[in-house]
Image (cartoon, rainbow, N blue to C red; front, side):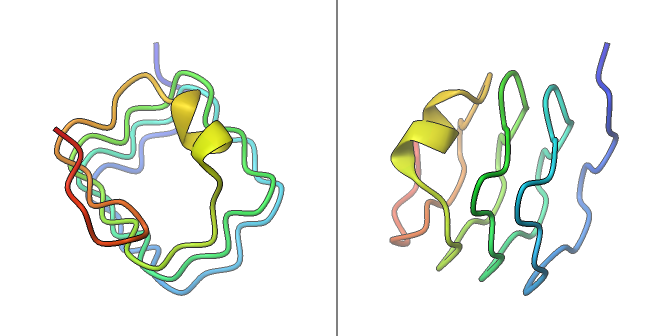
Length: 79
């Protein structure tokens, strides 16, 4: 069961430092240019999310349950 339902939410440009987004549903969410420093994405669904220019580490993203179709901070699409 998902903790946070944020599918398709526009969270662009927000400072979300240290937020607990474990198991969050962030499918198709707009996270462009967000400061995601220290955010816990363990088990989160980031499928199709837009992370263009977001401040986030590869280690944080590796904890997500899915990044399928997500646009990564460098603009590439995750397959």
